[in-house]
Image (cartoon, rainbow, N blue to C red; front, side, top):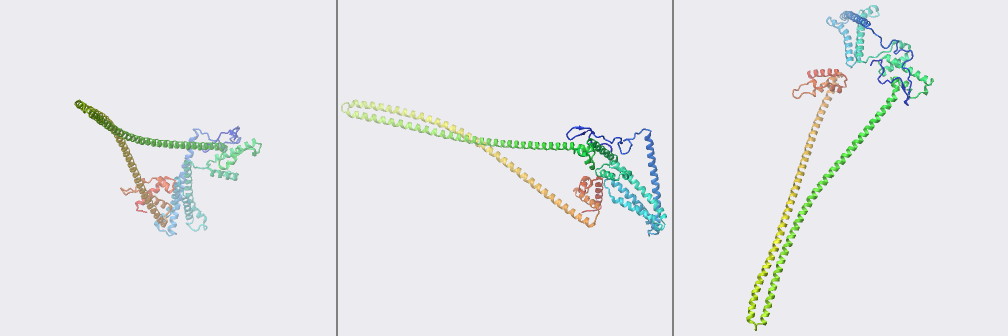
Length: 569
């Protein structure tokens, strides 16, 4: 984009009302006016035959200027050298050796200061004191040459003759300086056009306003500024024609070009402002809505995650409760089974014992009753049937003995079956109790295993906590060491600043010493040497507020030399 092109934000010539209805736009330029301030077209058509002529002409002029300036400078320097050497030795008390170097120092300082000024301008760090010093030395050499042959007022013509060639030498150097600065600005894209002298003479007030806008709002092209004024005039005339000369009927948006022109806006930019602002407002609203939706989404995600975590925790709690209740119920069932089996065995043994005792008692009662009956019958028939009774008694005794045997056998059989049944029940109860005891042992083993795992988890957590505490302790010690290091560095920096204040160093010397201290902080502990590459230029720029990497590099090199000379803060 050239300096006369329209800015990127320019809109078409068809204007847009605030309501969105298109209207015919004003003419881009005043009718009959050329596109630039002069009547020349935007670009001069060149033919292949004209370009070599122009190049040859410019080359010839450049060569003539270079040769002439060199010749004038050499003559002026030579004359100034002879004059100042002679007067320094004869009138000012210089020795022969110093008198030869005095004119060289005076005249060479002008070139040196101007060259250094140009160098610093190219590096982006201009210093006006250098140019002022060059001008002071320029005035000094002219004065010394003019007053070399006596008072200036005694013979002004002679004084002018002696001061003329040094003045021409300084003029040539200053012309070269302006040429170099102009070229540097053109290469950097910072060259600005000036307002022609004839415009200052013909329209001084408008020219001052134009100059103010060009400098305040960085409009570097004078033709571009003229074009903007022409567009504004054309737009204002179009607006007056639209509303019959009464601009109060125009809307606020239509009056924006006149209101924003003092602030460097073109007609197109001013007319595009409402649409741009509405678009920016919509973008801001959309961005705010996106942020709100994103925040809402993050909040919902956090709530969902919290609910899921709570549900997982409740599930784990219910699982543990079920496991504990299952183990407790199983243990209770086993204990109840053992108790029931023991009760049943006791009842069976008691019933078997009771049955055996009742049978034995009944058998004994029946035997006693039969014996008493036989004895009574024997006593009644004792006399009559003694022999028969004796036989019957013997027979009955025999029968009684057999009955006793049968009763005893029956009682013994009954007692054996009951006891066997009781023993089988007891064996079954013992088996159930053993199974219950085995299940209880398994339950106790599982509980012990769970307790062991829980103890291991607790031990692991305690170890993790101990590790975290150890890490925190190490971090705290590291922070304390860093704080002590920073405190020591601050103390060294304070002492260095106090020493610099006492020594009354220049700002550059202070900056070099600060860079030297930064280099000392990066001394290799193995070799004990300083490597300037360990200190980035960006760190120097940030610390000293320097915008140019070249200046930071110079500071770093000078700091390294200062350290090599033995500087220690």
